[in-house]
Image 1 (tube, rainbow over the protein chains, first blue to last red):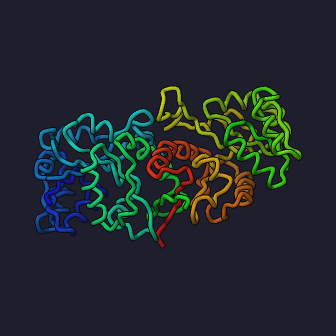
Image 2: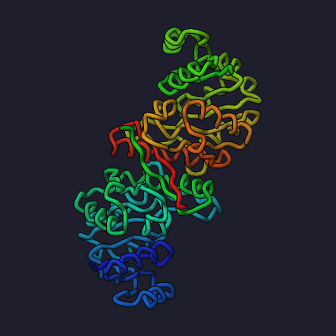
Image 3: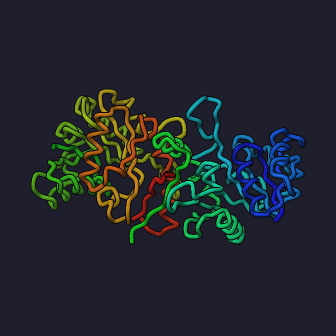
Length: 218
Length: 218
């Protein structure tokens, strides 16, 4: 499948590399074509991996991943172009973290709204699915680095889009039973507001190879 | 041990009953002495269980539990009296949920502050420990209703107070290895901001007998 990955950071690189390893054709997008990190990534990965602007990557992808920093995601997606995102599944893995006040970061949006919802409102013709934002890049693409079963959440308004994303997650190594659909895109609120807890769990356990598993009673 | 439990709702009743079952002497506090729910609780539980005002319960307890609604916790604790809370461990299990806008509730404080921190600032002579707010009342006091091991978080500035609360949690049935200390009271932010995700997990799993287990890599 042709996939556009927007963002050249750790998360974008991890997802783009994983997708290439699964035989997808990936173009990594950034603000300007020729971005150093994107060029280096494409050269290292080789094969069909390419790079270009946000718009190039979005136009290329049959599915698009938003792995830009959450504070700039709306600007990046606007640069990508609504017309290049229309009718496509838009996988949003970003967290609207604001590091300008130092550590710990705060959220630029929360409580009554979320980045996932903002993106869905701004791009109503795209099928936004929020997922994977509750863990490190390594755990996203290699769930086996955490012992036993653990949970990846998913939220979005379109059942078909979530089905497609669930398949992608399973191809990453997530057992189908560990993919938990939380409902419509307003659940992005909870997924993003989990980040402050995630940061403390990381601190307390001393490892980013960490996640939570949802457990119920029998 | 003499314990004051502030709050007559489901959480207050569950905790107060559990504490009595563990041979603690409990006074349940509410805005006015003779509160119908508190009187009924004390009559049902029998033994040394009593009820009274927030101030009566706080003065009685060697340890005090804040199980009031988060939106009114500061008022309840003010009514309890700083002098009745001074030098004591104050276990804060409240969530600052605002249901006035309907479902889902929003938080009255989050992101750059938390109820746990507000309480610690307002009552600097008390040793606030935030815990148990990330699950249903039933799971708090009967962790076995959820299968296998799962996690209860704890945050607070005083190591001794957290040690005492950890012992209490273990007496409730929480295995020591499932009690995760997240650090100082600012971690209350993450614990309270988890609530919107908890509500969606409840919705997705269809049961309040649900919790998360923190899992790491080996």
